[in-house]
Length: 290
Image (cartoon, rainbow, N blue to C red; front, side, top):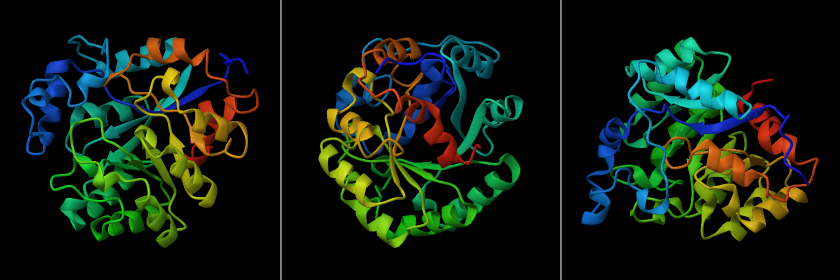
């Protein structure tokens, strides 16, 4: 039941620790969706949810800062979203191919251009997954919407998983596009597609557990949650029938520091045999890392 500090970790959600001012520019893509003035004044759209958000400083090598933080906590590898044409992200994965696993954030609103971009990113950078935020699309796109189907099909063809935000979004956006029940149809239509949920599946965690049990191709990651708040249903599922389904993900530097995450990790009541799978083995299998 004790958190083992000698297990190599795979973190399935980190970003480059660029300064908040630069991050805030990236969050501008949500401006057309946010309606309340409070959200528009936040440093990050879900900033009301997090205390002591990391505040990275200006440097000439953000990838080196990230690698240094990973080293402090025994994180052997981490997924990093790249953007074609965004040199900081693509340079980072090229500079650290043994540590940073490239993934691509995809937008169903861009149609076949997104599909072509997936192919380019796969051929040039070797992306190991796609990621998407249905409630953050403008306009929003439900998880089971036909606009996603070309992306799901291409993931199957490329043999890569897709990470999908599910449940109530942190930013003050409608949750309808991310209702957990929508995953059921996607897993049915695409049994060869590996789907990994992000951001908790709140408030329908019980339903998420039922779907995890039902669908072999569905997994759950713990992104954007301090371990103190891992849902009891998820911990219980991992300790019983779901040890192969639950995947560690952090949220550095967007909302949580690695110090906060791993200080909390000590109190998570996973069984001894679950820890290696949760911290790394499941992610390696899903991402095809060997």
